[in-house]
Length: 297
Image (cartoon, rainbow, N blue to C red; front, side):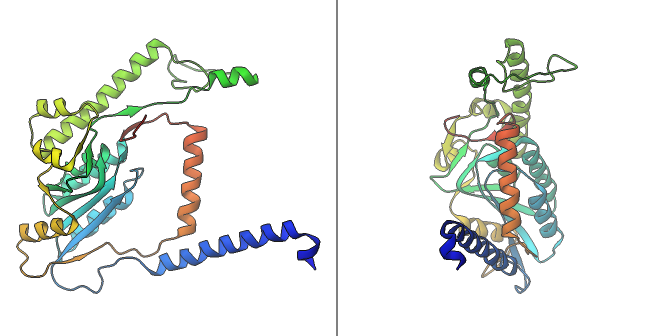
């Protein structure tokens, strides 16, 4: 028998068969499951979840537009559990929320973490509610890269660069960064930082000088953030739903719903996530400007 002649190969094949079989099963479960509002009638509060690192704005913007166009959705609660992420997608979500609140109330409900880009997005809403122990704040920009020069020297690896300008290979991991380059990048980060400060000041209707005094990257508890007027109320998701319902005059029981998910491929998500992580850490190692809370970095 094959299993007796090649026991190790048989074990490996069996393991991968079970592994991928489990992934396919989960993919099917996710594709037929999910949260939907098809069967809830009457006035509702729409709940949109923003979780994890913000790398793409497409789904959140789509959900905001869907709920904005649905007359049965009277207000929206944006549940945020995110340390922030990319500058551009955070700004795109911020802008879409600012457009949405012209016709519908949007309340931000902070979970465990709503920091940096997570707070940036929240500041665009009609109101913010956080748990007392929520990690928030971290108003700032971070940019970094890994210098592999010493490792390359030890193994005899040389990087040959032909460039059209002094800054074209800015952030190369194969060489030390010059002081001129550091100065340039600091100016670049400062410009993105003031964009953050201005938008928070506008979204929260707060004096820009006060925001600047808080925008040094420090984090706050939800309780501290309320005292500093960065947050309006303390409470959980249910409190946010009730607050939104009262704001739009819903009486009695407040029904809520989530965006319809037509299909979700767990396998596709796994593959795309793996490819993204590989390209991000190997091809372009951490050289990005982000609105993100990264402890220890």
